Length: 199
Ligand SMILES: Nc1nc2c(ncn2[C@@H]2O[C@H](COP(=O)(O)OP(=O)(O)OP(=O)(O)O)[C@@H](O)[C@H]2O)c(=O)[nH]1
Ligand SMILES: [Mg+2]
Image (cartoon, rainbow, N blue to C red; front, side):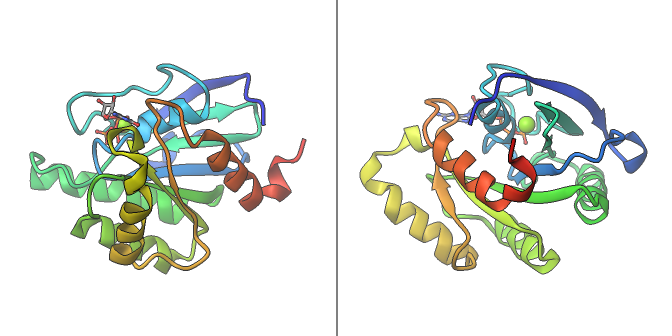
């Protein structure tokens, strides 16, 4: 898989702002600060196309990125950041829910977690919701550079168990920082979207 070209298309907070496009979309969901924006840069081989932040809650809108005119990667705002007002949380709900439920181009959801931590209640709610929607999904356990390889399996099993991940749904250890797990992730995406990504 070669990715040579990508660009940021637009930023939106509601369906009126979504780009007019019939390309298939892959959306990143996950807690604030787990590395959703970093994973987009990692998957697209870019350093800082999507904005990465040191303070949680960096991405508060939906950002759309075009990959080779083949698909759009969609960066959704993160949840679970404690220092957010009730009003902000409601805003998050509206933004994310309208996208996930309403966008017909959405073909695959990538749920991103921090490989070091047991999934939270919010992660469980999110995952159950993805399952209830019946959308194809995969899970990336990011920041794998932060733990020794010998813990990968144990932590991934804990993630599987806590979220009750459907058998057959891949959970892949990646590090967007060290760029590990790239081939495995793209192979998996290709397999799940094979009808669309053949060149
Ligand atoms: N060590 C390490 N740090 C990472 C990795 N991926 C992301 N980070 C760091 O984690 C922090 C958050 O990254 P973002 O990509 O902004 O996270 P996000 O999920 O988009 O966050 P929000 O936009 O706030 O929802 C930044 O300081 C990143 O540099 C990784 O694989 N390893
Ligand atoms: Mg972000």
